Image (cartoon, rainbow, N blue to C red; front, side, top):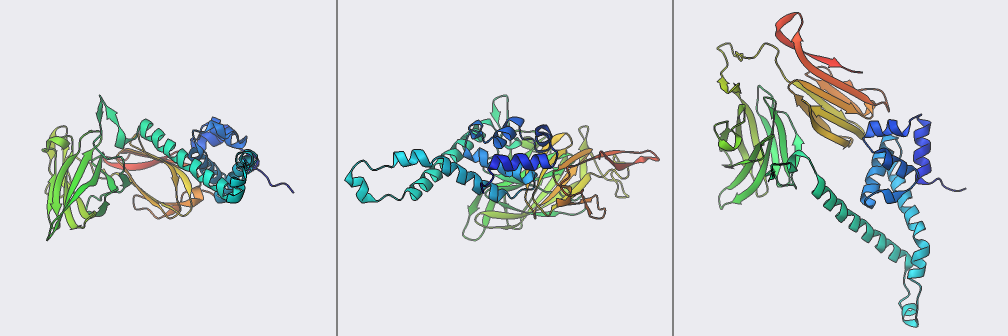
Length: 376
């Protein structure tokens, strides 16, 4: 019995779910062109094999297929298709080649590995030259001063207590302070005989510059708008170094009680409430717990926060000032806590879930705000 090919498996799985190609494209943000290329096995449409495998994994995951099986089947088909020309290319032309006794299967494997390596280089070059994310943004010919090799984890800093973060050479932290996206990372570590000193870097979106400062264990630094490189900062932030190793730093981040609004600094009143804030003016805070892999997309106050595949076991902490939009490919794969409410499953198995939360004045009390859920 002939085994089904990759394209047939994908097409039949989509049709079984009664989905059109346009439905899939809308849910996954994969171009219709590439969906059809996968189903018809027209792999020449992709820039390289790494792209092909990436789209195949995302499409297969969306259809709830065994992605490992799909990729192995795809690679097997590619090897089968290359058998005939390889036999011609490796046919011995003299007794010298016969004496070498080539193992054709090993040669095929080596060529396949080489092709994957070349595709990976092409992918890196393509992404490096075309990326438009926050960390490599350009404006008026100036480049954002954040190294491209650093990944940023989205975290939140509570209003009432400090939060501890671990920074490494290739991992920083991104958090919101008074509706401003802030990024903190290690620029370098200066090692001494008695103590290490971390050179930390701080950026406020959409500024292109970073502010660098040094902290040793036990030292702290207050970041505020009085520092030229971060003059747009609306709220002072205190950074304290708990420990510094040769390649990492554990820091404690806390928000000050004062906040700039309209160019002025607002101090809390004697009752402990910010005089410019109405009661209940808290950010929209959502934490998502992924039990299985699922496509996800987050838009925070009108800016794209994340789009892609989230693996099972990962958590996402989101915070927005006025509006938060969430899209998840598999509702049953995600549990959610929204502003301290009980944890709930986001939706039904295999169903796309869209959630929109907005902050709006309480219609019964103009001195307070409420967080309202829109959508499905």
